[in-house]
Image 1 (tube, helix red, strand yellow):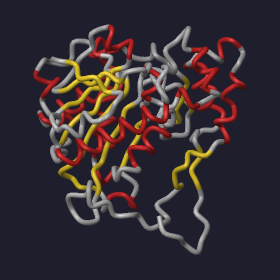
Image 2: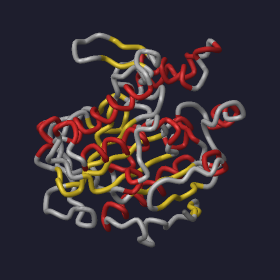
Image 3: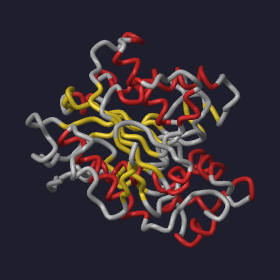
Length: 314
C-alpha cells in the first residue's frame, strides 16, 4: 500500500468487542472455566486490516485475470464460530490478491451476532433444525456472493468469473450446498458463477442428507484436513490435502489467541492448536489457495506445494 496524507484507521479484531471475544472464550471452553479474561484482550486488538478501502491497492498480476479486478472468496464459519475468528488467517489469503468476504450466520450457530435490526443473537443452536440451519447458511453465503450486496468500494473490484466459496467445519457443507444451489439456479441467484470451493476440515456429517454425491464435485473443490480429520478418513472434492501438524483450530486463529504454550496445553482437551507453526500453516494454506485461484485447477503442482501437505488419494 502506498503512503497517503491522511491517517488510515485499522478495523478491530472483534467487530462486536467483548461480546465477540467472550463468544470465542466459550467456544474453546475458557468461559465455562471462568477464564474468559484470557481472551478479553482480543476485544481491543487490531485485525491488521484497514477499516475502509482508504488507500491505494497494489495490483497483483499473478492473481488478477482482469486488470484492476480481484477474485472473491466468500467464507463461512463453523458451528459456534463467527466472522472474526479467522481474521488473521483470512488476512493472509487477502495478501495474495484475493478479496475475502467472511460471513457471520444468523441461524443461531454463530457464537454471537448482531441482526439487521440491532438485536443481539447469542449462540442458539436449538433455534432451528439442522436442515433449516444448513439451508439458511447456504442462502446467506449466496447473498454475500452477489456483488450488489458487497460494500460499494468493493463492487467494481471483483472478477465475476472467479467467485470462490469456502468454509471451515460446518461452513464446508454450507458452502457445498450454496454451490449446488447456485448451479441449479435455486434461491433466485441466477447470475452467480461459482469457480471453485475451498474447504477446511469439512464436517460432512452436518450435511443432514441435503448433499448429493454430485454436489461434492460439481465445481473444482479442494479440501484441507487436520491431523484428527485425516485420522477419521475425511476426504471431499477433487483433491484432499492433509496439513501435517495442524489441528482443527489451526484453520482459524485459535493458536494465536493466547500464548502458544497456553493454546497447546488446551489442545490436550480440545483440538485448538497442533504442533505445526500456526503462522506457517496459514501461509502454506494461503499460497495453495492462491495457486488454485490462479490456475483454476486442483491438480496443479503449485497447489500441492508446501512441506506440511500430504496428498490423500481419493
